[in-house]
Every structure is written in C-alpha cells, then in structure tokens.
Length: 294
Image (cartoon, rainbow, N blue to C red; front, top):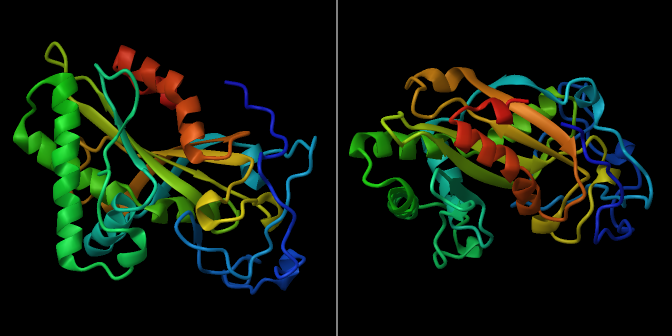
C-alpha cells in the first residue's frame, strides 16, 4: 500500500527555550554511536532535557533512516523477564488513557479491554504484587468476556495461554529496541496495543497476535506535543508479534516481530490504529495474516 503523505502534525507548538537547541546538546549514551540518551522516551514518561521541535507546515519528511529503504520487514527482539513484563503491563493497564484493545470475528470494531476505573497512574509508580495481580485478573476477565460475546464459550486452557502470552508481549521494550536497532531515537511515543484474533468459527483454530503501535522519530525536531501523553511525530510503526497461541514457552528469547512503518498525519496513536482497521478486517475475514504482513 502507498504511504500517506506527511506534513505538519496538528497541534504542534514552538520549541521551548528551556530545551537544548540542537541534538549535539544531548548526552551520548549508546556505545558512543548514538547521539541519544540511553533512557528511552515512551508515552508514559516525560522527555526532560530533550529538544522538542515543530513540524514545518508543508514539509514532507521521508521515513527516517533505514526505514526509508525498508518500511516493511522483520525484526528479532527479546521480551523482558516475566516479573518486569507483569509490572509494565499493570502500569499500561491502569493508565489514564485506554491503550489495550481487542478485535475478533463477530466484532464491529476494536474494543477496549481496560477498566473504566482503577488505580490512577499517579499512584501506581511502585507496583505492588497485589496491584499487579489485580491488573492481570481484570484483564483476563475482560478479555474472556469480550471474546465469548463474539465467539461463544472458549476453552479455558486456550484463554489462559492467550492471557499469559498477551501480557508478556504487550511491552514498550520491543518498541524501544526496534527504534535503536533502526538508528532512530530511543523513543516509542503513545504506545498502544491491539490483540487481533483470527478463526474460532466452523472448527477453525484460534490464532492471536499482538500489534504494538507507537510514534517514532529520527530527530528531536520531529517530536511535538506539550504533554508526555500527547507527544507525537509524523511517523508510526506497527510491530506484529508471532502467533501467541502457537509460540512455544521458551520462544520469548527469540521474539520475531514483523514491522510496518508509515507516514501519518494524526495527533493520537489510536487514530493511527483506526487507519489500520481495514487491513485488520480483511485479515479476520480471510482468516489469514497476509493483509497485515504487507
């Protein structure tokens, strides 16, 4: 498919005078090769000390770096240890903004899997085991409810595996690792996750993948937004996990992700996800992943 023309991102403001005026003002931290700080920029953290620029009206930025040559491809990463993954998931699950969605046969569109009420993000910096267990329990209940409304009663072992593998796969670590490997800034802004389900009808086995979406950047000047949760760029990437129900338990060490980067003109990552829904619906209709692999 053709990549969208990129121009100014709506709502961008002029660069703050408190921020460094050039990338050379940033501390070098990636083995002396990258000009960016070692700490990644994510949708739930602030970009303190970073130069946040403004998109120039009418300018058409090409896809950054190596992505201009290969906007679609494969990337091998590693999932974090399970304890870290569970804590990261709980922070995402209880965030103020909805970040986790599911779509399956029988659904008219993607549905949020997060609760409408829960611990506020301002109070969950230190994740207790109780909060983590509560997040996992609520997620399992809500995901099961959403899928059984669309597909009917599902095998409990299949659902248990889906919940466990989905939690492990929904991490910004893979997004940050992807950005660094592509010589981009270690930034993965406004991360969002879509669990895509295929099959489940007429004896077809269930298949499930987690699609991780986020804004990426090559230079600080490509980032705009006046709040951490609203920072965005003209570039978005979708990282599609392996089949969560087919993957082996020890496959987390070699987590092969299929990526698709494109230019966008959206202010929120949810809008970018919605722009992808025609491909998701085609995959669901045909019970094949091909529409999301090209």
